[in-house]
Amino acid sequence: MLSIQTNIASLEAQNFVNINTNFQNNTIEQLSSGYRINSSGDDAAGLATANQYAGTIATLTQGVLNANNSSSTLQIADGGISNISTILNRLQTLATESASSTFAGNRATVNNEYQGLLSEVNRQAASINLNTGGLYNANLTTYVGGGDNQADSQVSVNLSGASNAVDSTALGIQATSVAGGGTGLTGNSVNLSNTATTFLSGSATQNFNFNIATATGNTAVVIGVTGTAGGITGNDVINSLNTSLATYGITASTANNGTLEFGGSTAFSVSTTGAATGAVADTSATGTAVNTSNYNIDSSTALNGSNVAGGAFVGFVGGAGVASSETVSFQNAGGTYSVVLGGAAVNPNNAVDLTTTLQTLNTKLNGTGISAVSNATGTGVSFQSTSSFNVNLTANTTGFVGNLFGSGAATGVNSAVGAVPVTGPSTTASNTGNAIAALSALTTAISNLGLTQGIVGAGENKLNYAVNLAQSQITNFSAAESGIKDANIAQEAANLTKAQVLQQASLAALAQANSAPQAVLSLLKG
Image (cartoon, rainbow, N blue to C red):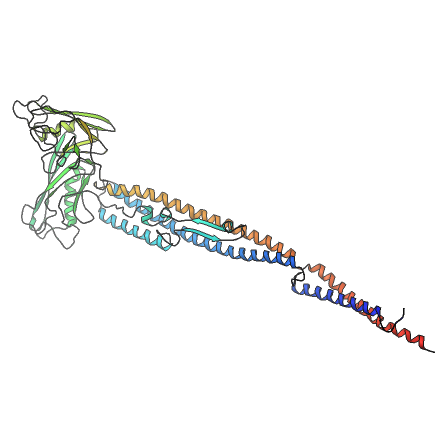
């Protein structure tokens, strides 16, 4: 039907012109932006999914930065721990040097360096925040992302607790020392380390009376220290004593408070009085000491109901016609050793006085690790040992004048039968005890430091693995987002050509459709 009112062909052509124009505009938009989805209307469901991928990618990208920063922090800690390990090696060297009984140097000088290095361990531990309670002495977590839940998105490196700190306190070496150890004299407060003081001025002499245990008895030795007109220093005192004591395996040194002390593996006792002539300052106050570097009976030990008076052994001083004896048994890891002691009226006559008693005891105990030595006052016996042992007393016979352990009363206060353990040794009482104890502590410290370093190293590896996974996830999520959101450039380039052709064709068709009503005029020509 021909009509000039309604041009159906033109309307259809106009519709296709709009469609082709929109097609061309959308294609140009995709080619210009590079995205297939430029508004939610393009693909609402696809855009929501792509946005989730984009959020995950953003989290993972920052997570990689977090992990790299954490790895750098652990590498700093690792370097600090390695340096502390080097310091511990030096501490071991110093302790080993001081632990030798033949060391001829000044242990105080060695200990000064040792204590300085302990302070340096603390400083470096604090610098890397791995001191006790430090910032990194904790369970360190790094948020990397990429997991199904929060826990799976984090990497933990647990450096919490004292066992993972690397300062001297946490490593158990803060109280160690390689200074010469020993036993101090009772009541002594004379500070030999005071450089402002000189000792034994006016050529005064101060004597030290030693009783030293030997395999066959007791050796009494008097060691004298003689001053000069102007006095001598504390170091001079120590050197003089050590020159004289070297033969007996005993070493003199100064304690932490500067007072005189004696140490050694040999059982001994020592006493001193004031200088023979008037000196401005003695090297030690009047006092006594028993070497407690080994086990020693002391006044707190009860023997079968009787208190031991300072480990004193009065011995048998039996008078004429007195026939009494007592058996003393010693037991340690090596076995049981019995000694029968009797006075003048007993055969054998082996405990008449202190000298013969000591000879009897040490001859019998030779090779057992147990020694008997005169106590510091020279009135009785102290027993010492390099290992734990028990003392066992058998029943006494009656009527003896001397008492085996105790006050020397005429009756047998120690007549009951039973074994009694002696007190334990002080590890710092020998001249090498401090250093040996330090070596033991350092061995443990190095092991513990290695465990912490292992955790740090494992943490670095965990973070590196986490970074590798996160980077892989970033790649895969980016590919997934691209598949949804990015435009297919080749396809859209072809679509642009198509859209341009269609638009031109639809415009040409519209022009023809618009000119069609003019054909009606030909019907009106007459």
